[in-house]
Image 1 (cartoon, helix red, strand yellow):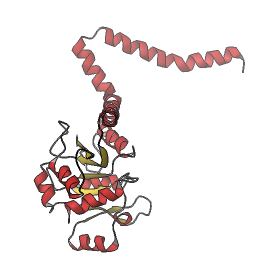
Image 2 (image 1 turned 180 degrees about the vertical axis):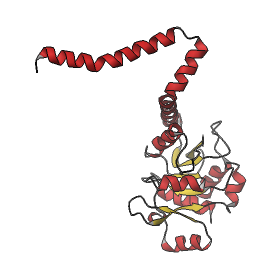
Image 3 (image 1 turned 30 degrees about the horizontal axis):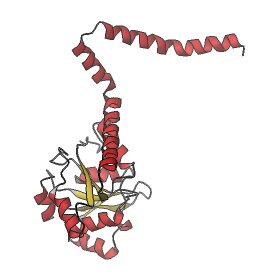
Image 4 (image 1 turned 60 degrees about the vertical axis):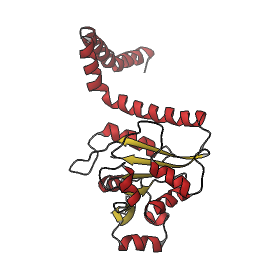
Length: 241
């Protein structure tokens, strides 16, 4: 193919994109500021929300690394909780866990994240893909140890591969004890296609009920590649002795 033909082909491929951009700019020129804001939010909400969530997460982690002298022993994520992360104070439940382990809050801390809400549709899938993408990004960051959230959310996350099966961090005796009390939450393993234990119900936990962090009784579920897996198991035992 000649250079001339290649140039024409490239021009044809680029022309629709160029014309689309011109039309969009023309639309924005005649809009008022409120109209522009509404237009941009309507058509660009997804990348805006995803980018904002990632930026908030990165900035938050950078802030901790730069300004905090405390060593983090755990990263706990609350989804569909009652309380948002409005300040830098740690909920009493996490402070009590530090005390239980005999660690000074001057030197150690528990990181946590709350305020994200995932609603499911009739198919059991996330209604808002933008919010789900933000949560998925955090779960894949290699930072989060476990989630505490609604049973349906745990099952959904487990069946698409984010949640670690219970038998990978609890003994057979521990699983049997939880199962006897009806606290094991099951889902279908995405690889084996078999019914698998993925979470522990915390509905009867006195510490959870006193925390003020939850609207409905949550389920504890470990994230794959949890960086503080041992401490996360200790936290589960602290909540459900």
